[in-house]
Length: 217
Image (cartoon, rainbow, N blue to C red; front, side):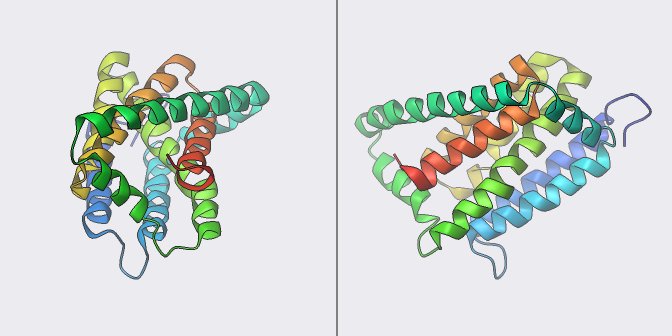
């Protein structure tokens, strides 16, 4: 827990990181969570992790409320533009990896295979209300914020991006891990620059909807 006026202790942050690694790794290894399919399991995992984040960091809810009250339109606009930029990176990146890696087509197909048989409207609902916002609440707004406060911006940024990448390794899909690395660096850099969970939430959610629902690459 955090003391008055300070970030959570490193041991608490490490505990949350281990919990995230266990939950996400289990989901990526099995492709589902009990009776829930992948997206249902991901939403449930993220919801649990968000609750833990707010319990461990008792000042987090106040930070989010303050972030919502200041320059919301500008943050939303910049978040959406950054999502378009990242989407463009993936469009170009796909052309490159298909030329370089023989395993790329199968890896990309496997990523989109995660939503095979799922109702598109339900997946869009879960992405828009839970998965996109929740991932930024956990990874950048909670973990990166507090690691940067404890260890400095550079170390906090690198550790968060590394953790975000490694939890996808359980999938055994090199393309998914590579995509996570790119996204982790991009959204981590965005957070380091603007210090706004709301901006990151808009960026992540818009990108998820673009890449999985609107126009998959």
